[in-house]
Length: 70
Image 1 (cartoon, rainbow, N blue to C red):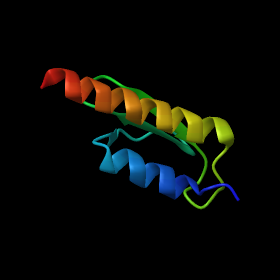
Image 2 (image 1 turned 180 degrees about the horizontal axis):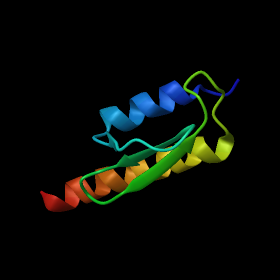
Image 3 (image 1 turned 60 degrees about the horizontal axis):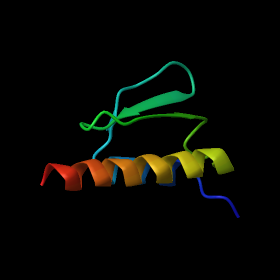
Image 4 (image 1 turned 45 degrees about the vertical axis):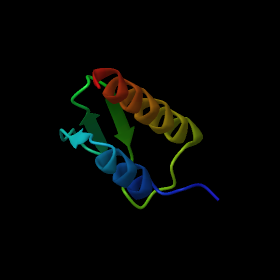
């Protein structure tokens, strides 16, 4: 069963991303390292596979950038 968008949003916020708002059902997230993610849909909607993959990819890139700074 697919996860909900609210779960992906929660992961992004825990990972240090900031919700920059958006138009309509779109939400734009920005990480201080420069990583950007846009999610579309309501928080209660099922996440699409590509959305789950993109969030995982961006979280990994943000963690890598954070480790490079150390």
